[in-house]
Image (cartoon, rainbow, N blue to C red; front, top):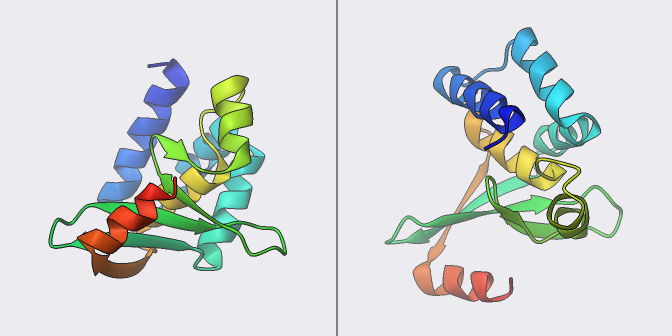
Length: 132
């Protein structure tokens, strides 16, 4: 794991514990993620992050709205994967970013308790995941 990832993980753990973000943490997150962090905060402010949880398993995935007028929504695992174009282009192919704005929005919303919680059956969750 890179030094940037380690720093980001430490900040996320602090945010999760306190359910708030200090000015110092904001500065660090902005330094690490730049414009993607700003975009992620706009998504969270618009309540654009859903945590879809299957029952009875409790497994979950995030559905995060895009910023464009086309009203896309992307399925993602906050720490590992997003179905958006940027994830594959900037992160997987080029390695230029640590994560995309949708992953950041999911992580931020989860850390702050700001997700819209949606409960579905495990079968419905499996169908959603099959579209990835």
